[in-house]
Image (cartoon, rainbow, N blue to C red; front, side, top):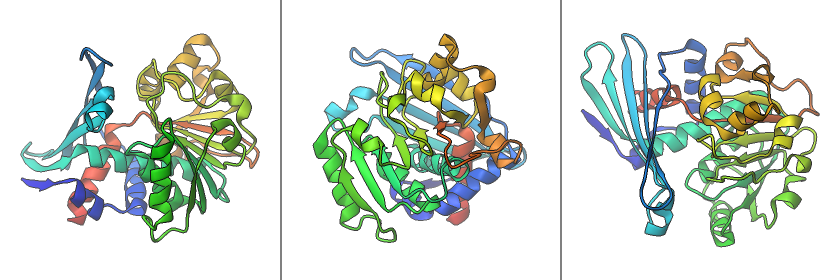
Length: 315
């Protein structure tokens, strides 16, 4: 059985290839049971255990085991830790063990960029990144792969972390991209200048207010993965055309979708499309330059399987 650590995954996966691989699997489909979601009491903020299987008959079977411990930052540990096991779908024999955390970051960012292909304006060049965690640089890079991003404003609860991330970009962390990064002191003031707003936080209450949004923007919500978590308020939902990665997952797990559905702000038919429908051409994304679009990602094991298969293929 082969093993791929985080460094190997970073080396083997390029954003453009990964975005295409995920798009292909959304188009072709695979078996994806709803993921198992378990709460673990820790004495502090509750932790989460996620079990995410997916398979393609006669090809590959994969499962990701992920833990989310929100208090890990105080221990100098990442909040999200995972492993991915890829097996043969013909014999069940293990083929590869991968760093699930690195795989998750890359496929999550790639899924947001895939959605942006359909939903953001093609001339989008200014990005607001809300959140400074490990996923933030991958989201910036992935969005810049599909749109001509030249300016990035970064907001974080800890300004020093936002400054450190901006410095990484300004010092040539992404040498193949010309991006000028700076710290955003205030979300409300900075949103006005953004074409794309990407959020990757553990927020329990909305950070993005709908009254701040302007016509033509695309809102990419990544962080909220439980019904109790929100990154955008009801007014943002009301003003936007809503898209999700999967209807099943978002309608059950994402607070940015679950709560508006529960209070009547959003109707089930108000979700325009998911990535299956967009990639298959069954539904259309952005219909005009003035629309506000919102994409809510909760993640799906399909994306993990596509990424894991690409790692093995590239190796």
